[in-house]
Amino acid sequence: LVFGDEIHAARWATKIHTSRPAAFASPGAGPVGVVSEGRVRLWGAPASPPLGRPRELSHRVELLTMTSGDDGRLAEAAGNYAHGLVIAAMGGGHVPPAAAAVLTALAQRIPVVLASRCAAGPVLTSTYRGVGAESDLIAQGLLPVGNLQPLKARLRLLVALALGLAPAAIGPGESWSGSTWPPATRLCGARSVHRGHERQFVHRIATLAGALLDAFEQGSLHGGTAREYPP
Image (cartoon, rainbow, N blue to C red; front, side):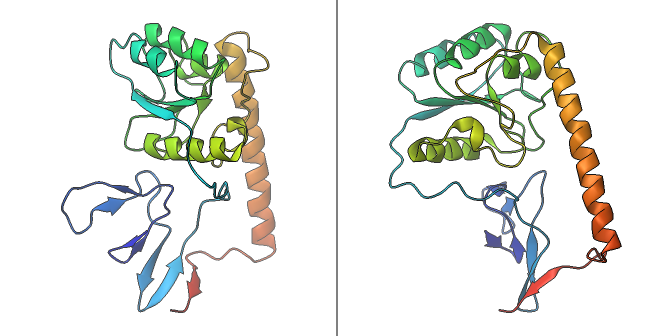
């Protein structure tokens, strides 16, 4: 999406105002480039490739927004006919305990994706514990969607289902990684989830540090540079 000389990745772009000229932004990510002096200057782009182009989107995927006191009745009703659910959870990925019981049961039958209703920031994976917290929901089979907004998570799940892909295999970037559906095993409590994600985090940081060091040694990183493309 190119608007107001800014280039936004479709994955992150959203309309933030009803009528302002600068009506689009990418909360939590920012533009991936700009148009300047008739040239396209790209800073970066989403790492994961597109899923593909299905012939049609015939599956039914419902998007439900969690609110305080939600008892899961709407989710239970939707689960009777939908092929998948996207849950716009509170904060870092939390739902009321009553709703958690319904969602974990549904996650054994259909893909239930966990997103955040916040404008920016990722779904957490191991910060909070207890029934309805993100670590509990993930341990019970819900699929965390990372930074992807609920509306976009719904579209991505629709495409994945249309292409016959396993929901756990198509998450953008770190999203949904390490999850399987239907859940083959269930972790024994939130503590197991916390330790598992902690090890993954340390490994990713070590891998990133090594890659950056190699890039500096090879002289392929230069501060402030950008790729330029002619008109």
